[in-house]
Length: 438
Image (cartoon, rainbow, N blue to C red; front, side, top):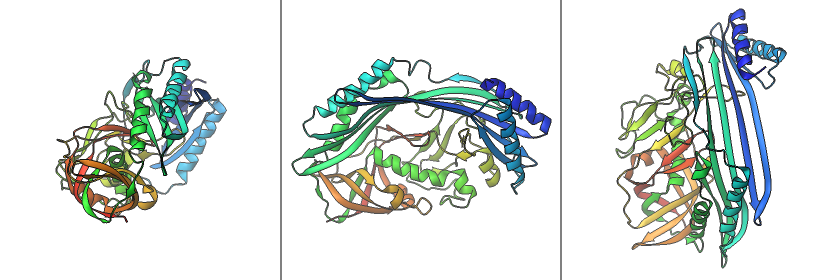
């Protein structure tokens, strides 16, 4: 069967069996091109596709999935989902009512360049980076792209689909100057291939990693701190844990009961917008078929909303915000799309420490309490001049830190996430942060 025929068959069969059914069909296509010594060293293409079934039977929910679209396999998957639902104890589940969502092509010709052009982009990236004599080794010079097609339909009326994609250049390298050795990477992601610039990505990587060469240990003390966008995006991703409706429903959110209250500096406005034309994670509707919208989470420091799907909204007495997430092989979750920390009026060039990188965040951060203690790298600014520093640690509480923002940068930068999301954030400045160094 085709995907359309499989959806039609499943919905009809669910009606016969007296259950509500949501069918999520998704297919992904990924291309990887690695370059080494002026030519492509590896080119790989992978695809994956399947149907995910979410059944609601007597108020209980069950899941199953299949990559085989034969009638026999579809019947098995439906029976499996119904059986899984019968094993559950909670009886509050229901599928959202919906309607025709249309078919949306957010990709168009964005990834249609010939393979030769994509190989050339990876090779250009590698050659530009390795032309710098400070580069000791090129760990990888890669072009990759991802394309996703999603179809959704349900017995409660939802019906729609979309296609989207992203093109990415990644440079990973090791640089040496004398006895100083530093390594790092740079990622540039765009909605369309032609928007990428291998030369720009290479120079950005060389600048970001090269500026840390010759770093000296930072002296322990309290100083003004500026967090660059890469660091800010990491902390915003941690903060999202507290903004998740799932976390709220499980009683784990530090922000529970605080809608309408000030939770951050009045210079902080956090927005999720799945409808951005240039957004790396844009989509017209979520994985339950709820139409996307621009959602303000924090406005001038005041908490306005959490991120919800219909399940977390029901469990917390709130409304869905259209942030359901799942693949055909996973259960229902919740998460951001294009998360924007809106730019401010800019950051002054005062003395302090510019934090360029955090290490071991996942091990050194508690997303429930917000306590963070990690190693960091950066630049110390004194009298208008900067010098690289390392071998220092910073400790803070994430929620208290966002309350102490004194300046917000006037330029925001896209940072691709790891779960089909993306973050566009500026730099942030703080008046007083404790640094543990030499």
